[in-house]
Length: 161
Image (tube, rainbow, N blue to C red; front, top):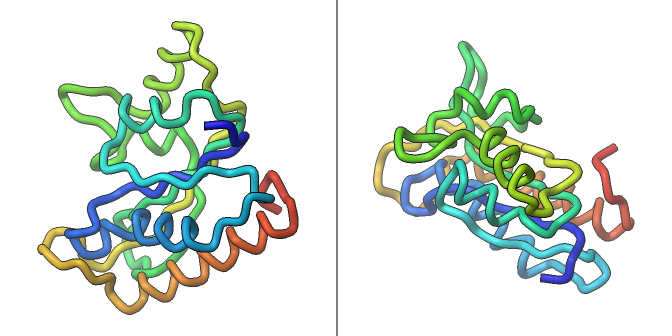
C-alpha cells in the first residue's frame, strides 16, 4: 500500500447482482494505470472488515450492490452516505458493527482512516440465487460506472464532480 486512494468492490461474485462491486473492482484493476495513485481491491465483508481495508488511505471509494427502493429500477447508480450504512443489509451483523462505527472506532484507536469515503451503489435485480452473472441492467450500470471511475482517475481528479 502506497497509494492515497483505495477503490473497494464489495460483494459476492457468486450471488448474481450482489457481485457487482467485485465485477467493477476486477475491471478497474485491469484498466488501472500507475498515474491513478489508487489501489483496487475486492472485499466480501462489511463492518470492521471493510473499514480495516481503508486504513492508511486518504480516500476510499466503495462500490456495492443496493436493494432497490420502492419502484426503483435495477441498474440505477446511487451515491449513499455513511449514515445510510447503519441500516444496510450486509454492512453489519450481530458479530460485527456498521461501517460508520467501525471507522470511528479505528480512528479512536489511532488508525489512519480516510479523510473521505465515497459510497456508490448499483440497485440489484437479484442477489439471492447462485449465479456468477450480473443481470442485464446491472451489467450495463457496472460498465458505465467503470468507465466513469476510470475517466475520473485518467483526468487526475481526486473527488467526484
